[in-house]
Image 1 (tube, rainbow, N blue to C red):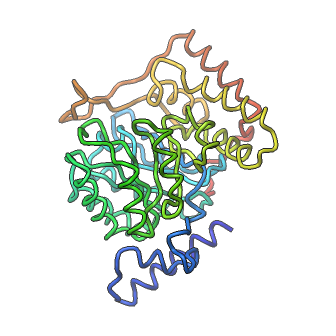
Image 2 (cartoon, helix red, strand yellow):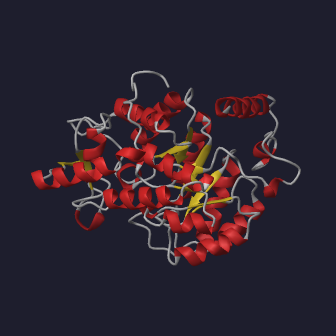
Image 3 (cartoon, one colour):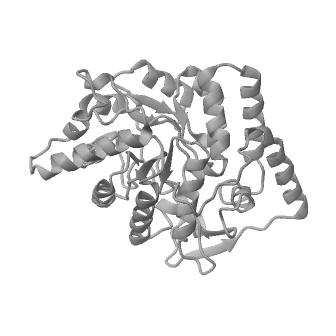
Length: 366
């Protein structure tokens, strides 16, 4: 059972920490029963498949709605996804305060403790010090995994190497590296060779969210280096997941958590190979749905969240001019015309055969 593996892993970590021993980076992960004699070859089976990024909900006054954030986590688990990620997108990484992000992490850690889905917490910052503050907080909460993007201040690949090596010294669980930075990042794309070097050096690295540059070429390089690379995830909204899964990607990371059941069904069909026609049909209908305009992640996506009974409104925080971070939150409400609503409803209805039809009891603990 997934939950049994999770608590076994947490028990080991707590027991090791209680012993007071000084633990080298990655050694706790190596002590896990999921690791064999050849640590470099072993990937954690819980870090695989669709890991959708949660969208940040807001109250009418513009504050983070932590109750809805918790409900969203339950929804994703109900949908069958093996895992979930937060905070990772711009609305949560750039537009929330440090306190808001840390509190959200705590809420999700508590919510997911008895859920079968794994929790992956995002730890990144403008520099190494800020990233480490989030990493240390995340470690106390014992998620199944951590994800990190390049630092806003990074200017060279060596900057990225040192930044992630600092993370390796703090992290005690699988670490997914994202190959793109945020809107403020102007540094280089981290090369596949850097990812491979870090995976070779640290047995809890080697998990890659690939979405930068020539994605297919980069993905082929990383996949050819398994091990020490342990898992390569698709991204880019899921638009290329079908092709990339045929190359060997083993999951997707995208802010499409409202389609958790659809992503799970795609994964099941892709893994079984039993019905290629259904797989193609599902993929076509999913991509048509998520391409709808206006807006994508904080547009029609929010409308579907509300339609599915999780979100209470269509509110978002926004960047300032030229993607600047405003001193005070800038709140807006997404509006749709009748024609846009009708189109969204029709595209969503087309996904009907692949949706779970029983509405989850989001007030229940699992």
